[in-house]
Length: 167
Image (cartoon, rainbow, N blue to C red):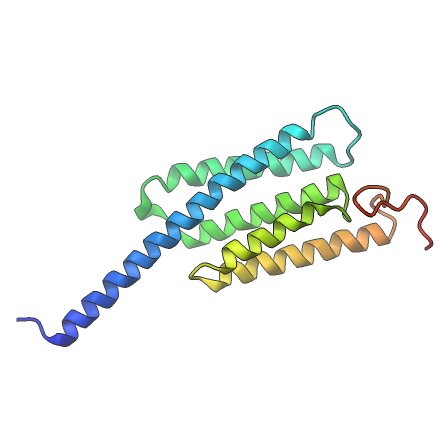
């Protein structure tokens, strides 16, 4: 006959398994959105217009789409869900956002999508994923900002386009 403590332990284990399954479903849903947006961004790179870093950005988008498709295929069997692979995918998503910022303009609104990712991943059960997206996005954007202010990247793109900077 099971004791009350054994029942409590079993209930706690079941709650943990349910929470893990719900978290996996959330992340997989976000993967689908990220894959679709990365594919659309890759296509828009080739609409006739002058975009800097077109080739490099297309590679980043294609890599994100490939990782998304591979992980979605793997995670069809929910028992194969792996948090570390989800974190790798989140890093690919951050790279795609930074590629969009570099392509459209560092001072454009593209970086707002990083805030959506931070909110989504930060509101999950594993706060490390939210902090990872926040830290990598912030460091990446700081690097883009420094390259732009340093004159390596163009200042004449984005919402705050600066044709002749006073540097």
